[in-house]
Image (cartoon, rainbow, N blue to C red; front, side, top):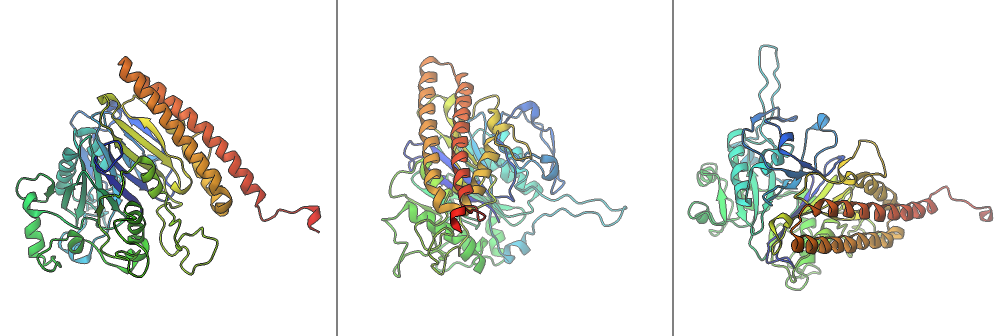
Length: 488
């Protein structure tokens, strides 16, 4: 199971922006960042995995996406993006469920005909499909929840997933329940949500969901579904969706909860105790909160740091030189097979044309720099958009992937250069964004976004090439076949 999600409410961020972010941890998927124009949006969508066909008659908006470079092989898998209405979406976070839920509402899987006389039975929708089916047609985060929910109820899904939406004011999180059911919650403005590959929500107001629907939405028959299938495992009248719809498996304690522990530890080092014999929460705790009020306001750099985690500063890091006995025990957030990591940021206090900023990196986040681009543009620079299936230093995806593969075996020797590289990109990228924000706000010429994105991409290429040169030299010096005549 792939991916790690972080969601940031507008009062939890340093600049009152909302953020939704996710590592897309496929199997080394080759990714690019593009803008999908209405003429390129399909009118009849067909999934590669489930073979479901869906008519799309509405007028789509342009939107950014990070699809597979080779969609013919595995499908589009658009992953994440921001549309022309400044609504962001990331899909999906693979989550867990349990046999009680999946038997009561089975997943809708593709069934290939066994004989020529029979017909194939399409499956439901899944991660491959959701961004394309939803993002071009929504004008708010709440609309995203409602559109996706209607598709889930009509077609079903073949997997358990969590999906995030954000606009300037709100962040929403939807989790699927079995094949057709779902629940969604508005993220409180003052919190940060941390969600590894588990059913995440640990609280939900059913009265609101079946009443005013201000911050909670769900399937119309969810109460009956829980009651009729004896799903409620809660004690003392408390309603905890995680205990009803989620899992508590040994695998979770190695693969999932440690990631939540590290992120929670980073967000609230003072208000909660995360280490030692009297810790409130440990790496294998099943009750780590889904959301936390951070001890300080959260920045883009904080989100990037958490999504790059390898348990640095703990005995669990796979890169620690001393064998602690637990080194590498838990699944890192920064992992080798990540294709793309995106932070969809919707800003306040700027003109509508400038509100959407997408921060993107490719490959393992442990070795990747996060680059921002304006989203309300006709196309992305070639350095981000023109990616082939063959390795090359001419695009951000492959250059970052090469750096990661070279640096990983020599982590201790390379990490200082990597940190300098990340900081250099972050400082210059922020400078360019500040400069062009001011230019466009004062002049009213928002077409300068294209110029800004080209400058950002040019800068990223220069900094990435410089980092590659340095990391290649370090890796070459440490090759195992190194030998000098003086070694005799």
